[in-house]
Length: 280
Image (cartoon, rainbow, N blue to C red; front, side, top):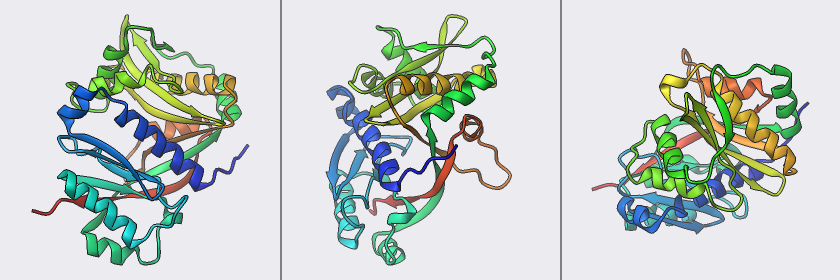
């Protein structure tokens, strides 16, 4: 089975999830991390000035309702300069990059870095594949996140991705009770060892924050988290699942990518990260 998801749908799904995830953090967290988000030119622009990981400041979702132009990119860069954001990433689908993109990058000091893979999957296909695999995770139990465990869950999420726990766990925890979000936890020996959530918008389910702590990996936990979310998405009437993960460079192996491919996800396109840095 195959499905066609337009880049506009895939990009806006991710952009809205990230925007809600960051801007929905508690005020104390936003203040401590120097967070601010806005919408410009149909996309979302997110700044986290005090982010040592340099991961969360991103501009994405552009090209859908308005073209990507030099003026648009300058406006986004001006926002980052005003926020004193040390570094930010532009994430724009290849289909929406203008012919003059190299000139825009040179003018604004934007450089190409690593790439992500955008993946899509018919929900029914993912569920059918999960049912056909029918291989129980090795000691891992996956279930909907229990009430009252959100902060613990948020801390595991950040640890799984190598991020600091202070403040960041509060950002993750805040998403657990937000309308439209559906958090799951992976358990091993009575402890939360993995996380995965999704944002449901109409017929689209955006996979988000799927990760397992190092000591609990290679037990099928991530696949189980994917399968559990796919089954719920099917019950909620979602037609398609959308996800992103790092592209594989020659000689490297991304287990997350292969777990998704095993469940029927298809690589829709590869998208470059374009890095902007604040000049002194």
